[in-house]
Picture 1: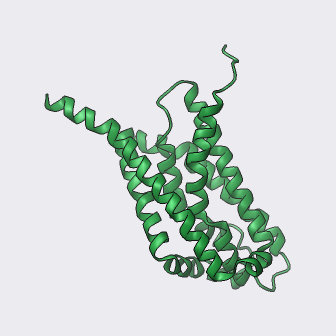
Picture 2: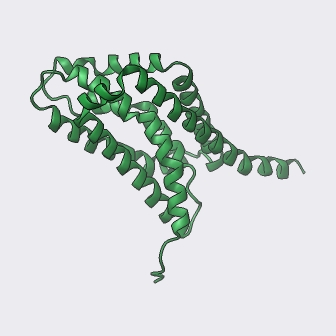
Picture 3: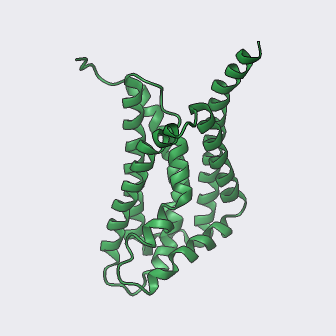
Length: 225
C-alpha cells in the first residue's frame, strides 16, 4: 500500500479552482444582509447561523463528491459534463456580474418565509436561500474537473472539500455577525464585492468549458479521420 504524501500542488490547485467559484455563487457576505433582515427579532439567530452553515456544508460536499458520478451513471461523458457545467457556471456568473440586484431580489424572495416559520434553518434559509440550485449546479460542474483515476482523484476531492468547508465557515461567520457586515459594507459595498467575485466565477466557468472542449474535440476529429 502506497503511503506517500498526496501531491500538495494538486490539492492546492483544486482548492483554488473551487473556493472562488463556491464563494461567489453562495456569496455569504451579501446573503448576510438578507439573513439579518429576515431573522431580525429572533432570539435564536446565532444558533441559526451555525446550523445553516452545517447544512450548507453537507449540500456542497454531497454535490461535489457525488454529483459528477451520478451524471456519469446516466451516460453523460466527462467532456460533455464539463462543457455543460462550464456553461451553467458562466451564465450564472454573467447574471451576477451584470445584474446583482436581480440576484438579491430572488434571494430575498426565497428567504421571506423565514419571517413566518419557527424551524427555518434548512428550509428556506439553507435551501434554497444559501445553497440553492445555483450553488448545487456549480458544485457539480466543479466535480467534473476531477482527474480520471489515480491519486489525483483523492487530492482533487481533498482540495474541493477544503474549499467547501471554508465557504461554509464563511457562511457561519457572516450570518453570525450579520449586523457587523451590514454596518461595514451596506448594500452598495456588498454589490461591489459580488461583482468582483462574479468575475472570478466567470473565469472559472470559461476554464471548465475549455477543459471540456480539450477532451471532446480530439475525439470528434479522430472519428472524422
